[in-house]
Every structure is written in structure tokens, then in C-alpha cells.
Amino acid sequence: MHPRERLPYSAIEGRRPLRLPDGLRLIVWPVLALEEWDLARPMARMVISPPQSQPMQPDIPNWTWHEYGMRVGFWRIKRVLDALKHECVQATFFLLGRNALAQSALARRILSEGHTVAHHTFSHPLLARMAPSVAEAEIERGFAAVDQAVYGRAEHAPATPFFRFPGFASSPALLEWLEQRGITVFGADLWVDDWNPISPQQELSLALGRIEANQGGIVLLHDTKARTAAMLPALLRALKMRGYQLVHVVSPAQGVK
Image (cartoon, rainbow, N blue to C red; front, side, top):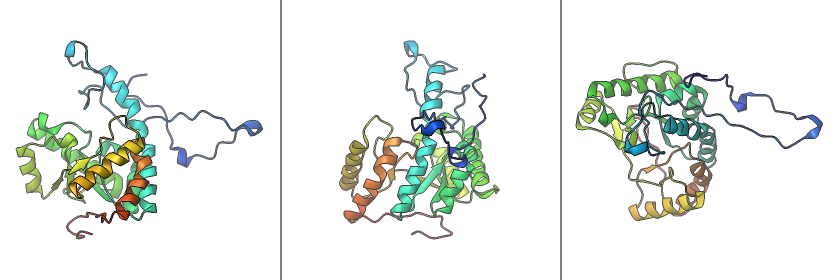
């Protein structure tokens, strides 16, 4: 099988319950990854160091890690959405265009439950390392893909004019271009290192400590991480108990809650 080919797939939630013969209860449930990483392009992060510090292309070791390790996280987004709904909290989701197209039902659920659907490029490259025209095309492609997946159509301007740079890798030229387009660029005041191998309790302690030290702010979380999905309910409850107001940011046409 060529790396770009995909096996037939259907979401588990759309299948009939599995009944095992003779009342058996122990099964093995393989979860297949759904994100897409282009083997012909450099990987966004070097998890496995290249030999002699020389990047490889195609970077098969890192491509393999991303294909499995990152894709499986789509199922964790459901846990994140359930936690937000239980605590009556709305969030802002910066979606990759290719992910929104691959999981359009999940993208539409995010919108239907009152969250803000914003943009994060089509395929997560580091835009500051690209020619401005190529980077602009990547951003526009992301706008169109997300809006097509969520709303069923894509206009010249994105439905929600919010954008976050992958890796916060912006450039003056791109910032000026986005400003001219009327797009608000988001950063983050703090993050909780949820890409590192820490436990949910460690992540919770880190999040609360940094929020207290900063007295609030924009917190960056990755909804595909198991540790983040596991610790989120406790984080939301702890923030409410400590008197923090959880702010929902929406597009200018709707005002700010």
C-alpha cells in the first residue's frame, strides 16, 4: 500500500453495537488515525532526530510517528466537547482545514454546541518559513476548507475572521496581509505543555499554577491530547471555584460574550 492511500473507514459512533459470541466481553479495539501528513513535505516537528543532524526527505520515521500518534486524537475531541457541555462553557476551536474536511460531522458538532470555529491553516506548516504568496494560499485554503466542512459553502471571506499561526510562526508581511483582510490574529498568554509526556494531574497543576501567576489570559490547549481531555473537567471546575470568568469570544458581528 502506498503511504497516501487509505483503508475504508467508518466512525465507531456510526456503527451498530458489537455483540460477541457466547457472551464474551474482552475485545481488542484498534483505533485508526485520521489526520493527514504529507510525506513529501518536511514534518512540522522532529520527534525522531535525523541521522548526522541532516533532515531527511521523505522523513519516513517522523512521518510514521505523526501518522499514528496525532491522528488518534480525533476521538479525544468528543471528550473535550462533553466536558465543555457539562460545565456550560464555550470555547474557541482553531481547526485545520484538512481535519475539518476529514471530520466534517465533528466540526459541525463544535459549531452546533455553541463554540466558535476559527482557523489554523489547511495543513499546519510553519508559515514564516514560506514565501508570502505560498503562505497566503495555504491560509486561504484553510479558510475555504473549514467553512465548506462546517457551513457547506465557502465565501471570499471566512465566516469567522479569527486565525492562529501554527507554532505562532508569524511574519510582518503576513500579519499586515491578514489585517488588511480584516482577520484577527490570536496568540496565547500561556500554555500547559500538553504535547509533553506528563500526567493529567501534572498538566492540571501546571495549568492552574500558570493561570494564577498570570491572573488569567488566553490558555492554549490541544484537544487531541489524551491528558488534556482527561484533566479538562477538573480544570474547568477549579477555575470556577477560584472565581475566574470563562470568556467566550465570538466574531465582531455577534459581539463578545
